[in-house]
Image 1: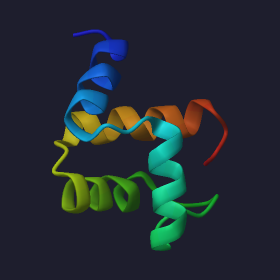
Image 2 (image 1 turned 90 degrees about the vertical axis):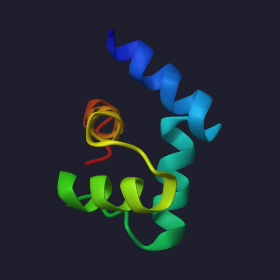
Image 3 (image 1 turned 180 degrees about the vertical axis):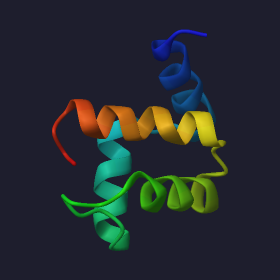
Length: 68
């Protein structure tokens, strides 16, 4: 599965893009610039039912965009 396919599947399941997750994580008090992957992954699993691989794909976008 390609990286884009992971993101497409996440969007199909949740209706959200990585930017949406950043905004929601900020509202929930989860997001902070120095956060660790485990913090985001645990929140994505609990709030959106994402699996570990899909949660890590969102983390990779956060890192790629320089948000963490």
